[in-house]
Image (cartoon, rainbow, N blue to C red; front, side, top):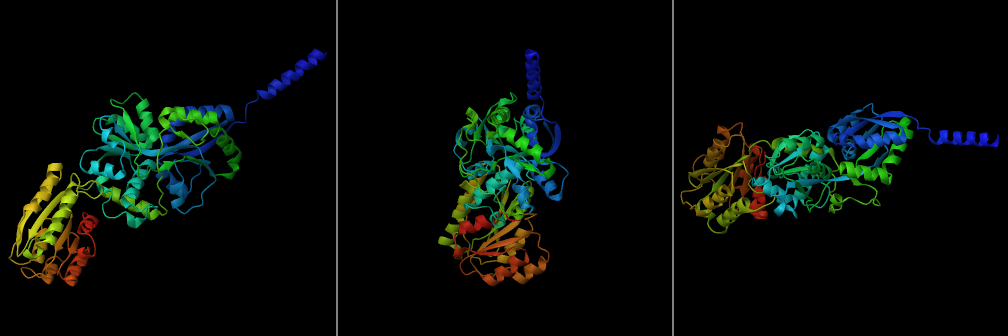
Length: 486
């Protein structure tokens, strides 16, 4: 009898210990790239009884949907920062894994890009030396993170990006190198595989680049490049949207944060563990460098998207340059130096591949019109050479006739006028404004010397532009600031 009783107790204990956890299904609004968690979620369901049904969307689009109201139980996005910009109260959340935004560069191209800044990347792209794919920032968190990273580095403030920091076409040089923009972080990997012969690199999460290398689908492996001036890091917070799902949420978070789950995520998706005690695999031990501040307002995001939308437009700038004898000496030297720097220097402000630059030199009349479409370094050199060899003329200063000529060739571009004198030949300012009651392009005037500030300002403002006084600062900086503004 005693043995029978003991067997009953053992059987009861076995039944208790083998009892499966309560089964529950929760709906989750998730970033599109989390489709790679399929095997991890199967283990989660087995161990906790919680099944996560993921509804995949791009992070930016999903954040907009969250702010408007959704019926999901949880949300699992690459970041909750975009939701915060919408001004809504953030739900309870817990970070689950980490992945920085990086540049994945073909090994054959990576030699000169291992220790680079975003400015270096922009310079290579503007010169046609770096072609890449990225996700659409209107939909995807990785695409928006790329714009934030480049724009923050370009601003050089060391602080969170403000709308006023996203000036003119700072992003345009970088975006010149964009060959494709996939709908989301997951799709950018598929697009890269399909078009890998057309591009040199992909701007994506570190996990995406490492997953591509492990896929066996690349003809040339990618090297991970971490721009030294900063990266945007995603921490994939799991957010509780419905309080009545708290018990299931807690079970999921507790499981995801265990060392075994963190290792599983790392090995299967190439994302870094949030637990610093979990030893990282070889590919994830590289220091990621400095983290960039995230913008604090939706206005910044809107400004970045406006710049992105303009990137597909081929830029056209007409420079109307005073070559009267009053420009002799330091003034013409400064003008030539500005163009030499814009033509030869790297960084965010150089002339870029695909851009059309028209030089209109004038004195008492138009002396020359020269059009250069930037396709190579030779075209850039020709711009500087054209101005270095150009002679000055004693025939007067026909500012408004030259501007009238520029408006006939500007198309949908922008006009930059540089002069140091007062109009004493050709058309008057009133005559110019009468001839162009609805100016087709903005005029930005760089004034130095004796140029009439009132008249220049009146005409520039009538076109939607403004005057920059070169005497109050660097002529080069003035040219950089207004070149290519739309």
